Length: 607
Ligand code: M6R
Image (cartoon, rainbow, N blue to C red; front, side, top):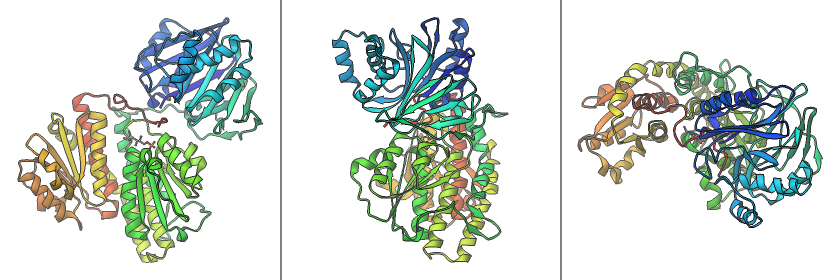
């Protein structure tokens, strides 16, 4: 959501703070700011909008100092203006915050009643005033923070600078991630290890309720009870190499084209080609005893979970519930003993999903996570970590993480089925063979990039677009609609093809393109019948199918996209490519900001 970095060092920090923000801009780009400590002053530079505006501001008004904090914002409370940009400062302290202070209204009223004057509409500013009050009353930075943290409800990662103490920063976390980085005569705070990658690889992950004082000599960490604690220093694998677009126009485009490689990379950890078996990391529980799977996720990761439900039930005959993480806890789900709760997340930090994970853990479920960031909070709190190997995904629209999630989930479903005796060795070998075909088939799908780019000109003028699919391709219809909405701002809906006639068919006219996902196979004819219902009402159809499907049903469509002929198991991976490319090229035609679409952030760490 928001990105935080802090440095207590010996060299000027302004440029390094800005560079750290560059590596976190995907977390939010509503505004950015830094505050350095220099000559007993808090030197603050802030700018509305993208980081480039802050770069211009800092170039025009340099900020000296060898310690400082910085922030890139995804707005929650208060419009994305310069006044609401972090750091928020009072006379004595400046601070940056990721998360939401849920009780900020009552705190603000109390502070205002005591005469404090606010300059922003944010929840964050109350923390600056609370800490400042304590400092003004003569407390040390440590005692000031100790007095304030128990007053805060909600989720936060904080980095706090003190005007009179340029040699220290204080960080705190509850519900939002924060790491400490250790350098040579320098110490850092960051939202994640990636932000600190060029500065250090030596990282400690703060735990829930921890707070930390960093100085040039290192870090002193306290837990929620203010007891001194040690947190292990690990070597982060995060690459210091700048994440570049290479020859691609956008990160999203690059990430779409990386899919054959990263899916192959991911599969190499989950299948043994020679033995023709699926292979999972060490599992410390008996998978054959699992009697129910509960899948919880958000957004694109949720759609990966929907596909997985088909696979788990079809192969392993295990009943599966699936929920949006934001709904899950609040419907008081029944979680029986012996259940596996499976969480899917690119970032591993999505607040709704993390909260659901903790709920399931408290309810005695075994916790498995499919995540792309192996050092994330979800990864660290799981009983079974199933990493995807997609590499950093920078484009806000998730693409390669999705297909890698599907690869892991297919292998997991097959493993369940084998352990439960639902499939024999020959059937397992067949699944492995199909999975290993996926990278080449993804490559085949990418060959249609040019024709999809041309077709995007037909979709770009539309006000509404419908996507239809059946079975495991229904979640793909939802995913296609999500991709189009988020980056081209065209209203789109995904529907189960057979559900169309129960209402949405009323929307059909010649101005509403209908994208039909229909690989030839057991569900093809039924989907085509639903497609004919659209055509009979003047609907304009884009049919995405293989040569055989297009031969049978392509006539009369506004456009067709040919996919390689694939086994139904890997169709959701392969058919992800045309829906991603169609959204991508439509956004390019419309000239929207593909990698940083309006109002969004890559990682949503508030509920
Ligand atoms: O990091 P996560 O996978 O937990 O994120 C979940 C959603 O926020 C994410 O998939 C979002 O919907 C993407 N912008 C979709 O492209």
